[in-house]
Image (tube, rainbow over the protein chains, first blue to last red):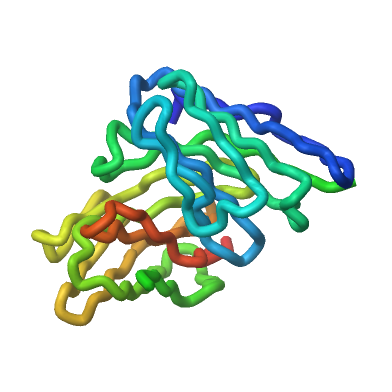
Length: 113
Length: 112
């Protein structure tokens, strides 16, 4: 489970503020994903990227943005348009989009002040 | 749309007993079914998986069974221990778009 890291562990957002969550992997994986986890619910896909400079919306992309300028990095920005951002955010990677196994980072818990 | 349903949402067993968690999926073309264990505040960890060409897979105290006709798969944990206490998620990969869908999770508590 090593090789994919997220920072920070906790993040506080003020109203109207954009915040960026970091996700880095040194596994040489092509595909990367962002999930949101709310209490009592499963993981919901926000965005995913199959390759550098390409990304696609998941089920709940509204209020979020991503970039994939480098293979090893897939940062997620929670914009002020996301009205209910409090959640546990998990980043994952896999060797390819068609690859079966996804490896998860340790997560970032986002709280609103 | 494609989805995965997981039951029960909570499960409490006595140490040494067995625990069974069940999931159903909607897309008959799904071909890969992983199970993840997530301890409080930590990342999900893959514990076992099964592919659509196999009916059962076992790894020590953990087993997964797949019924393709009924479109359901189950996680079986035998001789449960307190350290098995966690939230367990099932998932299914939908063949057409490689989308991975997760169940809502089952909180398993093993009482010593």
